[in-house]
Image 1 (cartoon, rainbow, N blue to C red):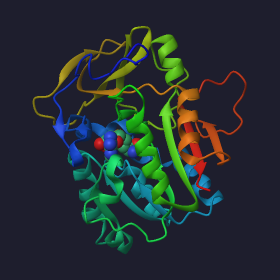
Image 2 (spheres, rainbow, N blue to C red):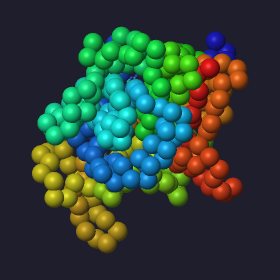
Image 3 (spheres, protein in one colour):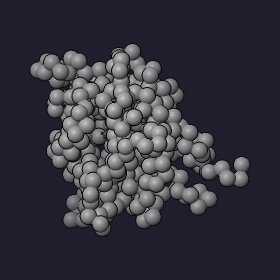
Length: 313
Ligand code: SAH
């Protein structure tokens, strides 16, 4: 027991826990994040530079069929469907999926690709048994995506990264030989060291001009950073929003209404996460690490996100 790492969940629970597919904690179960997600990520702005980078990456690897394993509200899946990829989408949160289903419904009348878009509830810990609305391709996917800092939602209950390893090996199983996993995480090394998100935070992922504030808390247990909590405040000026709002003052003195949501993450350090991925993909597997999608960033560049691309042998 002496070397056992502290357990995140043994310290405190940050919110009421819903029950999602296969019993995974659903941090999105109160629907608060889902409701303002589009404002947070910036809707169509997300599909600018970010789309260019992602599509380029997928094309470089001859990808056609994709599993979006953390589709959330469906924003990336739609982006890729419209770029001509075949996409299947899963997520553990019905509150987030609700928006993906709605998008499919709204768009299918004008574009037949939406009729073929399979969406279902699914958990990375049991991917082979997603809702029966998802039929996995017989020979595996060309690409599995777990992006938008999603993977860091998976906690480390046992203190040995066993859940994370299981999820990564499930992603690996879903791929055809030669297929790629694209998985990302925030720059937790920086967050742990400075107690805040990187200053030069790239706007690549989250383009919303309605982010009022993201408050960062780092929980350290016995010298180890075990959980990062981000409290998001989204400016909802002009949006009828019901009761869930607080008032905040902007630097120019204006008072604005904000909607809050809180998400907690397991803070993956780059070195440890890289080793964990390499272990699951096997010795010699190709593994590229991009800094906010750049293969060769300037020396003093501080990425907001690391994007890992691994090829199944
Ligand atoms: N990729 C989307 C969503 C990011 S939010 C975007 O960038 O907008 C993170 C998503 O991961 C949430 O929708 C959450 O429900 C999902 N998630 C967290 N744990 C999961 C798990 N174990 N299995 C499947 N999805 C999970």
